[in-house]
Image 1 (cartoon, rainbow, N blue to C red):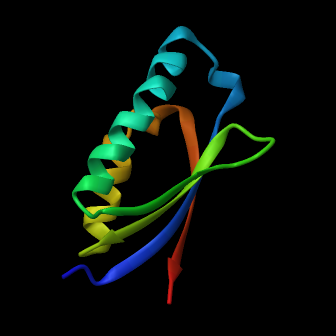
Image 2: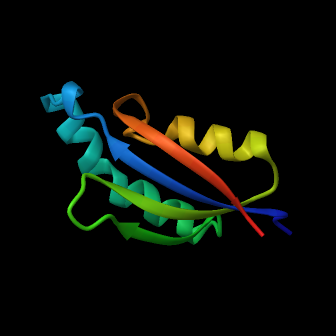
Image 3: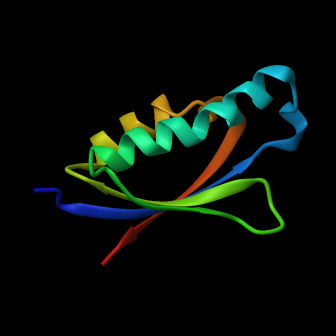
Length: 86
C-alpha cells in the first residue's frame, strides 16, 4: 500500500532547448504510462500554455519519489515543484 501522494509540477528549462530535450519530451508519455500501470502515477496533466506537466504520484516514500523523478526522461531538462498532498 502506498503511503504518500505528491503533486509534481514540472516545467521545461527553455534555455536547454536541444535535440536531446526534444527526444526526452517524446519519451515522457511512455514513461508516464508505465508508472500509471504500476500504480505510481494516478493522473497526468499537461499545463495549458506552458511546457511541462502536472502529475500526481502515489509512492511508498520520499526516496521512491526521488528515484522516479530522477529516472524521468526530462529530469535533466526540467525544474520540479513538489507538493505533498493530504
